[in-house]
Image 1 (spheres, rainbow, N blue to C red):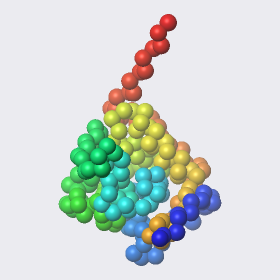
Image 2 (image 1 turned 180 degrees about the vertical axis):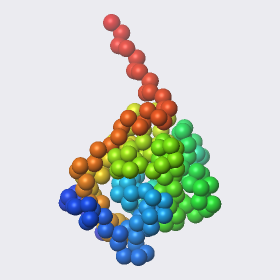
Image 3 (image 1 turned 60 degrees about the vertical axis):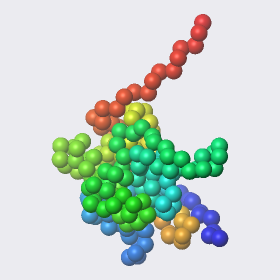
Image 4 (image 1 turned 90 degrees about the horizontal axis):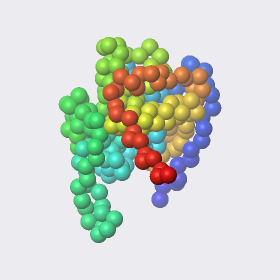
Length: 220
C-alpha cells in the first residue's frame, strides 16, 4: 500500500529558483519538457496539474467530469459505474470543447495514449494552452505569467463565464501559494510560491462565454 501523499505549501523563491525541473524520466521532468516544447510556463502547467489531479495519473479511469490523466484531459462521452446498480454506463457532459480529442488532433497521438501516458498527457495540455493563448493574443504568447489567465480559463472548457473564471482563479491561487507533495507512485513534485503574480482577468471576456443563469427571485 502506497504511503499517503503529503501536501505542503511551498516556500517563496526567487525567479531563478522558482522551478526545479527534476531528474530525467520523472514527472517533474515531463512538465519541464512540455513547457519548453510549447512555450508555456512550467508553473502554469504544474498549477493546473495540481488542481486537476494532485499530479496523479489515475490510469485509464476518468474523473467525475470525464477527464483523464495528470492534466484531466476531457472526453465528450465516458464510462462510469452507476451508483444505482453498479453497472457501467455512458455519460456525456456539455462543454465548449473537449480537451482529450482536441489534444489528440494537435499532437497526432491516439486519445487512448493520452489517457494513460503521462508525458503525452502533459504535452497535450501544453499544446492546448499555447493554442488558446495565441488565439487570445493575436498569434503571440503572453509576455507575463498573468497574461495566461485567459488561456487557463479556456482550458476549463466550461460553458459559463463564472465557472471558467473560478477555474482560472483557483489555478492562480495555487501559483501564488505554491504546493509540494509526493504522489502515490513516489513522484516528488514541487511548485514554489509566486505571491506577486497578477492575473489579467479582463481576458476572459474574449472567450464569449454565457453568464450563469440568475436564480429565481423569492416570492413576496
